[in-house]
Length: 318
Image (cartoon, rainbow, N blue to C red):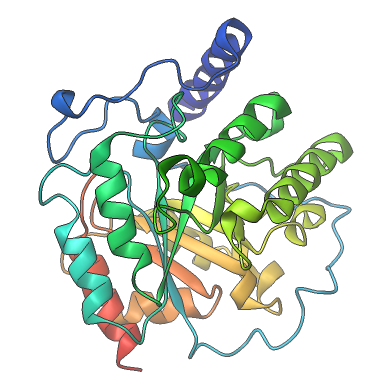
């Protein structure tokens, strides 16, 4: 309950800031203000994942395009919300991970300031590290954008999308680019207006040439949403919670509703994995329901996960 209250208060604060400035967020990063492991502008949701699972809509019916060829687990990819500020050496483990595993595909979510920030470009540290990732053919970098559960003004969302898309042209560096958008705090409940909201946002992303020819849209309700949302993005995060909640969801057959859907269109994010957990078993459980996975011993996205490194090794060797 406390987590849900904080998330609602966070959204209300976000909407207030939009009304005052029309730019999210209002504070900008300065490289002198950061160390390797903190990011003060990251909102509570990005540091503390959702703890709730939403029950499916009574009226929900299976979608069509999500059903087909989804039972292959050999093409599992890694999705990483990596919100660490890129101080000297802070991204080195991530760079080594993708370089050492060229047979594994990675989608890496970057988040300079709860979005791209209010300036046209983030600071020089971001402009240094992102091209190092985009140089790898097995990496797709996407930019974080909050949608406040469908309550954020679409003009503010569009501003963030456009800011990311303009990075290559404004910087004069084609390698300083993202390949799509991660729509965080996505709605999950049946609501025609919100479904239309996310369809419009996705169209804006797909039509923007600044993301390249294969731009990627990921929506993150953190739970299995009403089926009306599932056909909108390239991938939907159907789980984002601690390991204990994942085991409860499995025991409660929460994922039965999506077991016949295309796993390439579904993602899972499992945090707070206890030390000593059978990671091979956990990876196998995740691969049964989703084609993109993330796991971490921590509840925060502000640090590198050693558990993730082992998961990548497991996936790369199977």
